[in-house]
Length: 128
Image 1 (cartoon, rainbow, N blue to C red):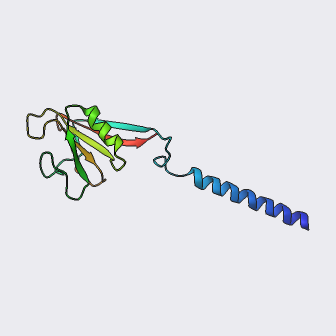
Image 2 (cartoon, rainbow, N blue to C red):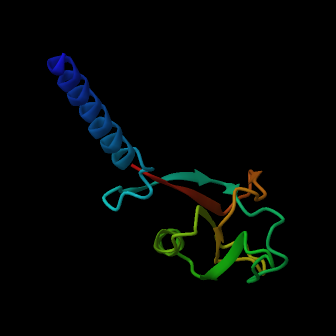
């Protein structure tokens, strides 16, 4: 009888150890400091369509923020990568308008998207 109780206790301990290990390893990869940031890039796509109230302005609710002036898409992506709240970015290239060479960071899934916006490049952050 005691051998059965000991066997049951051993099985319960094994189940608890496996469950605890599963909880610690099942966290999102975004929380894992070793996870590598990867990008999905989109050309002629604008992730902030109709979101900023004007050139060089952020939305008052913070879901889209103006990051700065740059003629470099890589710089815009870097600004987003360094910001933990940034989900993605849109870089407005040389459009010949007041919006030219500006970087906007997307901080919410509620944002406007437009296709066929020439001189716009966007990127979406994810973790490998």
